[in-house]
Image (cartoon, rainbow, N blue to C red; front, top):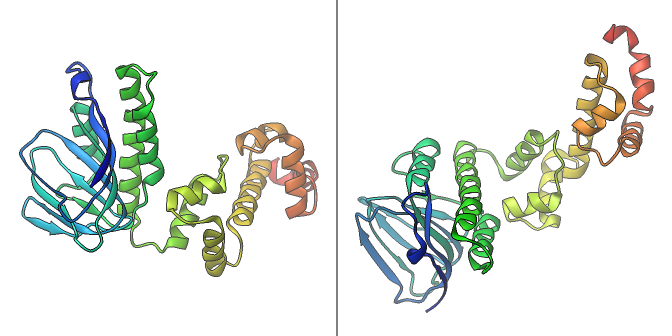
Length: 272
């Protein structure tokens, strides 16, 4: 059994809306077993590898690779790793009014296991924040608060869209970020896929790469702005997060066949 633990018990401040108790990575063995009763703390635990059992508030659950299990305040829980395939997991323990608000506002009551939801990049960031020796506790809490909110929203969206296929979830991610600058590496990290696998999965479903789909739909939205607003070309370029007006115009011409200004002129009566 080996663990990397960052402990902040001694730095807790009752005036803060959130306190991080500890965070870490556990490389479990067959003897790993934790039991608690009624403690006023919350925890996110993401399973990197392995399998095990969680018994919480009369539910018996089986967290395994790529699952997240949640430990809620005042719960009775027992969890332990399997003997033949023990957990490797990354976790954070926290408490406070902000923690209670996140769980009450965004997550269904009595939900303790979320299957196949990759939050590794967010958890790694919490470990990175925790390990930085040059931060005050208040700074650490501010940065962890942002990451915990991101995790909760990721879990919430995953639960709401869990009936979507993986390709549909990727498409939804592209659609909701259509006006933003989106790096495909970030999309891969969010879903836990390699870039080659993500491209293959998306193309098999939609017949187009994620990048080509994203660029095509940006241009479709640009056409809408050209026809139905009085934003100038540069303003549309900025609004859609193109690197600059020249790149926007060249991308538009590559897909539509004419420049944005020519497209607007050819539909002048529409915007009149």
